[in-house]
Length: 292
Image 1 (cartoon, helix red, strand yellow):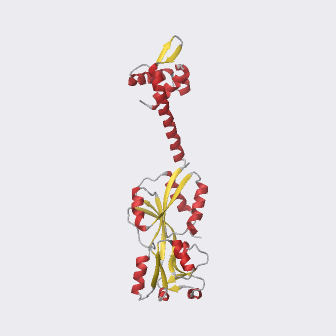
Image 2: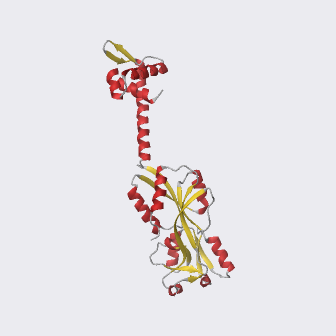
Image 3: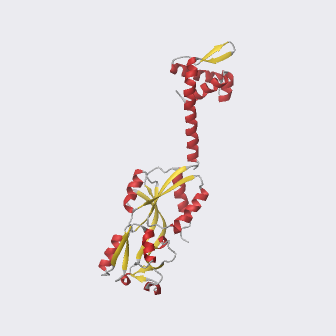
């Protein structure tokens, strides 16, 4: 059974006239008649009964009409959904953004993306470097924004968006306010608030050890907003990406000797076929002026 046979049958059942049905379907009457005869053969009996100049549905025709109308309706809905998807109308897009990437630079990009592609249904997921790989490879996420200090595995394609400095973040009355830059050695003796999802965390503590810089770590948290509010309330300082600071009252200075930076990149799975929504997202990311 083919879709055009169903369409020809339903048109004939509606008009009860083979000539009018053929015109409605934009085919010749012999072609429509052949298709219906083939459908009758597949179903095992006649669907129409002709009496002189009148055409009627048989009992079999009455029975299958309702079922074939459901099939036709489902098919049309599938075609409409496919058209909307390909035209980026209600097209789903699942994007992971690493929890340490702040909204300062990303939200303006998302705002422009929404204006240019209002039909895309974007969902943003909070991810860590640890769960990113499985989420992308399994298809749970279609692309991700990451800021890692190391190069990713060749299973992934990356597009560099911007560089970001790591900075020392402190309250307004802290001694660092008089400095233009904060050498790592100046962290000696500070109360350090440990950001557990920080991508530099292990290498940073290793660096402190190598430089014989001792800090106390009274508090740890996976929550970026909690860490920043703790800093604001004088509970300690922290290391943080420059554009991740979201509390206005905080002050910061770039770290030096050595300087720490990261690349913020858009990541997709190499070789995976991208949906139209992902293609649009990647294209807009390439065109966006990330460097202000």
